[in-house]
Image (cartoon, rainbow, N blue to C red; front, side):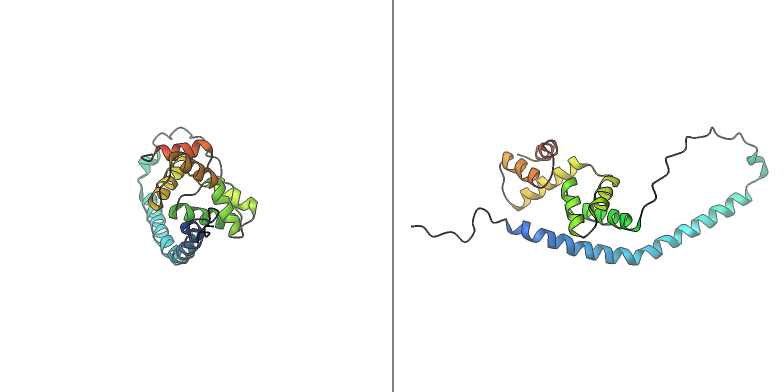
Length: 176
């Protein structure tokens, strides 16, 4: 009789077990670093705004007589966000900047971080993400870790929450 191997086929690879911990660690570092930068980022904007105000006050009266430009259509006002939605958006952007996520996977990660399902879905829908490019990045990341067949990589991406179309696109961007 053969001995069972140390790992079974149902065990997840080591990188999948530690991946969420690594992402969480990087997120904590990013949030901590970002918290200190907010004050300094606002200061130059305030100085620029006051400089622009001074310039507009010094403009000659002749220029004010110029024809007014045609009225541009008003952009849609941005929705008023709750604090939780703003935080969920910031967290989602941090995760996307760190590693590739599917729409479904990012919602799942945000709910794991204790955001409500509604706030997580709102945040993921709110941010501008090319999910095909996320699938391509995820496919390349997987191939950096281990070998896959084309069908196996498509299946893995779909397991991670990418649609079949996104998974196919992601794999098509690799050498498989």
